[in-house]
Image 1 (spheres, one colour):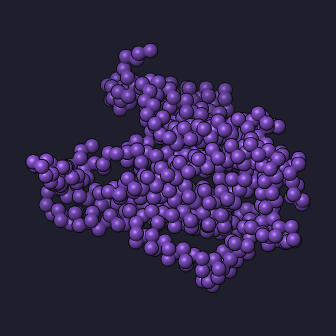
Image 2 (cartoon, one colour):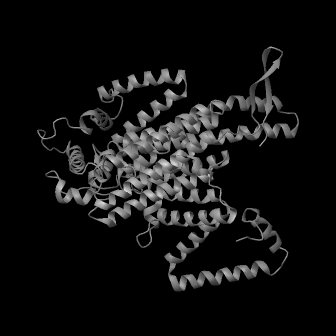
Amino acid sequence: MQFPVPLHRTQPGQWIEEMRGYPFAPPVLMAVLTLVALWLLANLGPMAAVALVIGGAIVLLTLAEPRYGLYLAVLSVPVQQYGSLKGLTATQGAFLLVLGAWAAGKLLRGARWDVLRDANVWRFALFYVAILASGRVAGDIKATLTEGFHWGEALAIYVIARDTLRTRRDWAGLVACLFVGASGEAFIGTVQSKLGLGNLSFFVGGIARSFGTFGRPNSYAGYLEMTIPLAVTLSLWALFALPAAARRWYAVRGGSLVEERRALLPLLGLLAALAGAGVTALMLAAGITLSLSRGAWLGGAVGFLVMMFLAGRRWAITALVATGLLIVTLALGGAGVLPKTLQDRIGSVGSSLILLDYAKVPITPENFAVKERMAYWFGGLRMAQDHPWQGVGLGNYGAQYDAKYYTSPFMKSQVHAHNYYIHITAETGVIGLAAYLLLIGGVFVTGVSAVRRTASDPFARALALGGVGIVVAVAVHNLFEDLHVLSLGVQLSAVWALLASIRASNTPPAGRLTTRMVARGNGAMARKSAVTIRHTP
């Protein structure tokens, strides 16, 4: 099928300019749109009408610029429960619309499937097939299909993000969406903690744990954890780049207006980046702290240490010192410099995350949550022992725990095992666990490779370091939680794709000077000379 005008050549701005030449076009268009809106309200109701309008906007935006659809899907994650319609959350609805519009756009523009060169796409697909295969032994196939949809959503978002995140502008747009969503969530959580909102079980030592729009402190902290490393690395990038930008602007100040403006704009951009990323980092740090999520604290600490080891020798030495200080702080329970509640929470990280002698330790208010978590662990381990290869079926952990694998007095599960590695093994066996570890390992290697390839590009290097920090933090936090729930996989897949895009990008930043050594033959001996080349976009 051939279209007379390729979709990528259409210009909405040109249509608007042409319409302005007809004096009656704008009023007629407004009248038609008003009639359509009134008909929708009268026949579908306000909620359905709003959903239809928003859905249409998402489709049109994705057709015009595929990255916009990805941005909207990422922004919908923290508000997914508030926009649900007939059992379909806002994120799931946005995903389905984005997927359809992206696929249609690929067909209309002429498909480019270079994304299939990404090894992580195949690792992800292998993992998806492995976990779906466990459905053949599942007692509740509906639960398998539901969980399969969630992972299919994450896989599709990875492919879409990998296909659309091609330039530095695309990267910056995604990061901006991550900052907007996470900072808004952190603000909500901080207000909740200060006002003492939430269930009584959320109160620890007089502090109300923040839970945001997710309803669970640990999931809330995990969501913030998927952004804060990027906020920190971009803050440092902007801070270190400011002096050079200020000197360039000062050197041309009072000269040519064009040169002064050319030097001033990057300076203003760095100031805006520093302000935005810095404020976001502080807000997210406050949100994670007030969540009192020890898993998030531990995951974040390990993630930042790995980032520092990858950042260079000086940062690696600082990481070693920080590791020592962290161990001492944990041993001393906060060293007396933190509020008592936080001291107790930090001091209990080692003893309260795991009980070495579960059976002999009686249940107390202080260890109730730990005993409950470990009961779920034991249930999952017994499932894996009885069904080692394909588990009990994807999405069937909760039903199987309640029916057979419970540990008294915790007779009813919370759907997941509070340890994703145990959870995926219980549901999909060692086959699913191996495929999952292969996927996570591949993403981590991709991130490390991206860090090494961007040594001469500070902006891309900051993004790569932040992305690796997120991968590590989530992997560690998953030892005590399941961070693949509530469509968090949408955000995580976008970060994974960002790392792959940075690694695959070999184009130097526009306007940057680079140097390469060109070997020139001179008889029997070769000499090397530096040739400076200015790259243009």
